[in-house]
Image (tube, rainbow, N blue to C red; front, side, top):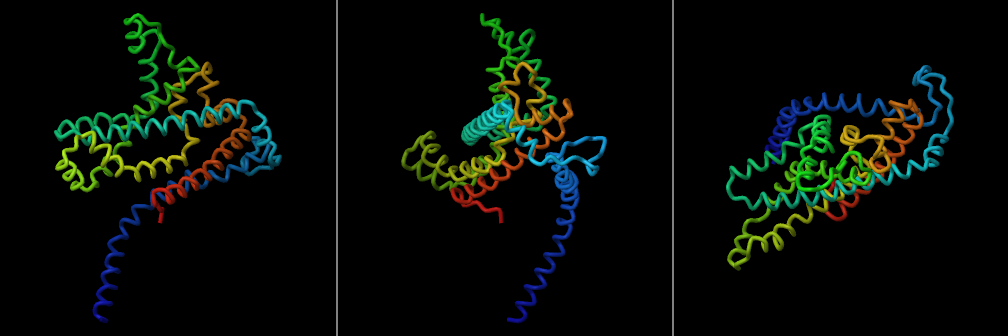
Length: 310
């Protein structure tokens, strides 16, 4: 018995030694996280000050308490920003979910591996292209004068549509282009979940004479339910992130009423109008709400999908 215990202890020690290189590989990520995420948190004090950049972050700044927050909640534009942010982000989450699940089901039905891999590569690729590049591409494609989309519309007898300048159309342009960019990458998790479904279920359904669509409806979708619930609840934590880079590269003042979100407003207030205290207050409010949404999303993931972090 003592020999078994000693062997187990030695095995654990050897395992720990082997894992040291893996722990060392985490150091650059931890340092980067500390420098770019934790150190800047000291700047939130600006939200409670009448900040003057010339005095520096740790200079003799005038403390004004919650005046910036009171001013923020008094802005009629703030509630418009919140509404735009929630509409765009919620629509992105819902449509990305449906598109990713639908694409996963269709990809799973492709039996020729070469075609399946080719299609997967084609729909994965947009995810890895920066919005700085895609924003310029969409501006050319959707141009009302020379864009290929409006050229086709006019050739069919219709009128040119100003996708990036019409305040009613712009939010949907943002939503649909984001779904086009990301739904393919989101299929990875669902395809992995489908691959873990017990194949004997399909064999039994084949014996009973079930069709493909019946297999999807009665086997695949029920087996995917826990994954869908998990990813849906976890996405609640990012519901106030409507896509800063995307909207910055595509919007203009004519669509501020429906396309301006909290992140873009903070960017303009800080970088263009130099209202650092107000922009920090708005950003802090967003972070505060996001924190509670993340907590709620993990609680819901544990309750409905039995998911735990540790």
